[in-house]
Amino acid sequence: MFRMNSVISFKMSPYKMNNYFKCSHVCLYSCHAVQESLLSSASGFSNYRGILNWCVVMLVLSNARLFLENIIKYGILVDPIQVVSLFLKDPYSWPAACLIIVSNVFILAALYTERRLAVGTISETTGLILHIFNLSCILVIPAATALTVTSMTSVGGVISLGIYTVLFLKLYSYKDANRWCREIRQAKAKRLTRSYSCPNVARSNGSAVQTHVSYPGNLTHRDMYYFVFAPTLCYQLNFPRSSRIRKRFLMRRLLEMLFLMQLLVGLIQQWMVPTIQNSMKPFQEMDFSRMVERLLKLAVPNHLIWLIFFYWFFHSSLNFMAELLQFGDREFYRDWWNSETVTYFWANWNIPVHKWCLRHFYKPMLRKGTNKFLAQSAVFLVSAFFHEYLVSIPLRMFRLWAFMGMMAQVPLALFVSRFLNGNYGNAAVWISLIIGQPVAVLMYVHDYYVLHYGSSA
Image: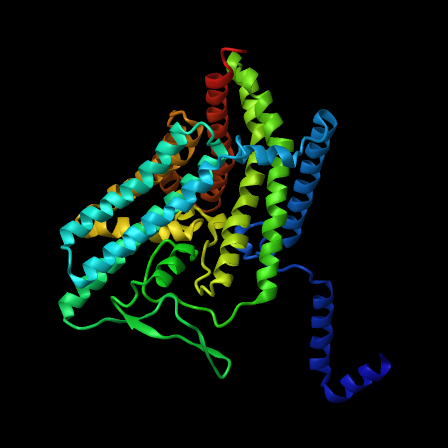
């Protein structure tokens, strides 16, 4: 200290040295500055990782308590044999599996219709009629089978109708995309060079080289079945391809699929089923306070199962198929959890369906002069139809709860976009997800219970 002061006194004049000590004295006792609190939006602070970790810990502890309470009250309810019985009533009758095998007839019908259209042996009008008939059969035949064949279980019906719904959307896109190719070929009077959607991958210096074909060179069995199994609903002649299959990535996704499937089954048997069964009495007695309590109790396991299913299907399963087929486009979802509007959520949580609606339904309506609100409402209407189609037919009862739930998204979207912004809008989206689904589940289970067991009760 003495040494430093001597250096300062040697280099500074008495006046400057006096000011230096005054400034040092002031800085020593000055500890305030103009600044905002960290939790204020004006502070610009965004690192809330600790609070997020706290929320996760609290969520785990609260659910652990609920799970322990469930075990103490009901015991172990997980039964793998019971899961098998959900798929098969009669071990010698597999109607759902037979339906899935029969779907090849409709796939080949679409391919051969396009081949006839490509060479001009049938007219565009005839081809359109054949496609409409084929697409109608895809929706009607599995529905009629699920309603009339008594050995078809509800779970088997949901799976088979889900596969046929995906096939319907794929073949509709296949029809449109090939028609666009014919229109371009006729308009330009030359061949349209596009990449082959299922090429033989050749190796050159460690990179994949893709061959190219033009329409109608894409109308092959290999191309068609590649599209059928590819994790997309929109057909094109050139699909982006990855250079190789990553075996470690593939195994991780496979292990995730197996583990999460077991977890889903266990949570449904151990947590969802007892909660739903205990909810029937308040619904029958119209005890509104107990109904609300049951609804809130069901909301937690239902939402947890929905989140796990989302990860299992959109991340693990679709990435597994994409990696196996070297399908390059892996955008199966976007950041829907940050949705501040209802429309943003529906546009980003299921990208394959969103792209199909945008390409084959929404934009064609806009080109025909329909305003945006009516076009969006029409998209929700089609979505509501398929939601009801996938629920009511396997359950063999028509209550329109899923249909009304989807159509209710239209006024909800208008309300949230007009009156709620930012975090409030995001909270509204989460509340609609957490509360809306259990309401629909309880409605269907209650009606199914009354329809099948009401008289005996």
